[in-house]
Each structure stands twice: as C-alpha cells, then as structure tokens.
Image 1 (cartoon, rainbow, N blue to C red):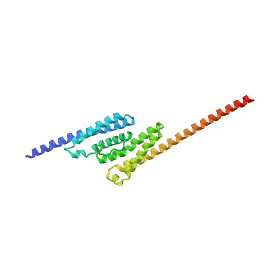
Image 2 (tube, rainbow, N blue to C red; image 1 turned 120 degrees about the vertical axis):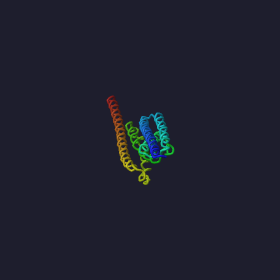
Image 3 (cartoon, rainbow, N blue to C red; image 1 turned 180 degrees about the vertical axis):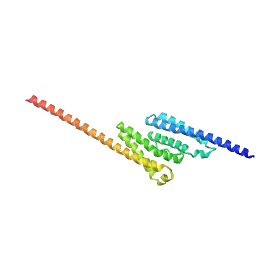
Image 4 (cartoon, rainbow, N blue to C red; image 1 turned 135 degrees about the vertical axis):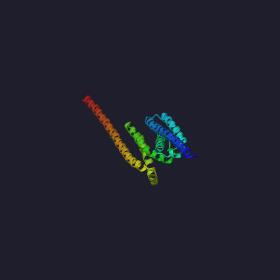
Length: 225
C-alpha cells in the first residue's frame, strides 16, 4: 500500500468519525431538550405527556449507543454524559411524583455516573414542587418533597467515596444542602402562618359567639324588665 493510499484511508476514517460526532451532538441536544421538557410537563401534572416525551428521549439514547458502537471514544464525552444526566433526572423525578420507588440506573438504562449526578439534581426539582404545594397551602405534600430531598442528600453524602470519585458531585451536594435548608425554612414559615391563621379564625369565631350570646342575654333581660 502506498503512502497516498494510507493517508487516504486515514482521511476517510476521520471524515466518518467527524460525521458520527456531529450526529451524536445533535442527538444529545435533542435528549437534553426533551428531558427538560418532560420535567416541565411533570411540574404541570401532565404525567402522561411526560412519559411520552421521555420515551422519545430513550429512543434517541439508544440511537446514540448505536452511533458510538464503532467509535467508543465518542460515547465518553461531556455532551453524551450530560444527555444521560438530564434524562436520569427526569426519569427519577417522574417515578417519585408517581409515588414509585427510586429507579436504579439499570432500570432506566443510564450509566452510573450520569445517574448519580442526575439524582443530585432531582433535589432542585423537588424544591420547586414543594414551593408549588406551599402556594396552594398543601403543606403535607410540601413536607413529603422535603423528606425525599433529605433522603437523596443523605444517601449521597453518606458515601464519601462517591463524592470523591465523581467529578462535580461535591459542588452539587453543596448546592443541595443550601436548597434543603431554604426549603425547610419555607415550610416552617408557611406552617406557622397557617397555624396563626387558624388560631385567629378560632378566636374570631369565639368572639362572635360571645357577642351573639351577650346580645341574646341582653334581649332577654330587656324583655323581663
């Protein structure tokens, strides 16, 4: 084989590799967009639509795996990791909102590291859901969200090695800690407000009853006179 033929083979291989890379980038962007869209749909209580959206995203992830089969290095890129991470976040959040248990990374066909990073991001979505419940005076549901947030945080931070071995996880945990503290404070404030309103309402009813009783007694006394 001549040098020209060798270089021509290299050129063709590089062009094919670059073509795959571009296809993968487009696919990962679609997965990321669909996953964010599904989370928005979940917050809007459109669970059926979110399931359809994530099913489409899952199909694209399978296509990414096919595209990277001959080029394994393209699978281990930040864009592919981010796509799996966003998808994992949406799938875990969906399962929790449906009242299901935490899905494993095998259940949703996501690599371990993107799964853990996506799991950490679920804490932020649970805070958003908790605040939505508080705005509707549904404190019990808000507290359930807080409990899930704490469960995820404790599960991750209890395993110190995970934070060391997964790049970016410690930063997410630091953010999650602040988010959990803020959510706990919001719930305490709202619970106090609701309790105060109930006390005021009871007091006003009692005062109204006392006034009515006093008026009735005055009328009876006047009649007797």
